[in-house]
Image (cartoon, rainbow, N blue to C red; front, side, top):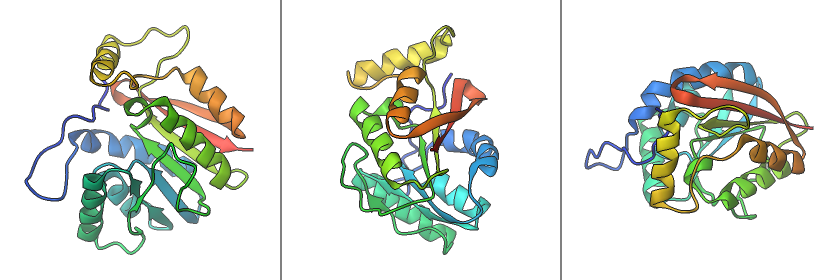
Length: 211
């Protein structure tokens, strides 16, 4: 089963939120990022959620400055709490970004990460993400996506099919996206898919590069 469900948070009664899936996938994601990230610069995460991933990545890759973002107030508060707990100087203050908007409070970034958002947001958010990446990334800059996807001519795992039905029952605008559609959208914004890596729990890592 995909570990991408956004609906399981441990309610500690505190500002800091917990997503159990993070503990299951962060090491596998970091192993992919090790081959993808630049030797210096800024990494922007879109839809940072609880803030757990960026806290882990900032410690694992201290040569980068990490910029978390989210649109949700509770998410922004949780990110700030996780950041404060790390004591790391290479995590910037979380900023509010609506992925679907054209108005991002960022001028440039060397890499963009987006973990488990594409299927838990309207298609307009993915469109905005690709426009933003095409606008902000330098030539050769990377966009990294992680999550479950549909693919032509590849049967969908039964657990992912059930997950897709569950998502659509909660919001008609959510659901697993067809990789071909995501790839075409990236190409429309000057980026090419360079790597497709199968990950645990029926997820994929997708690495795009700006031309």
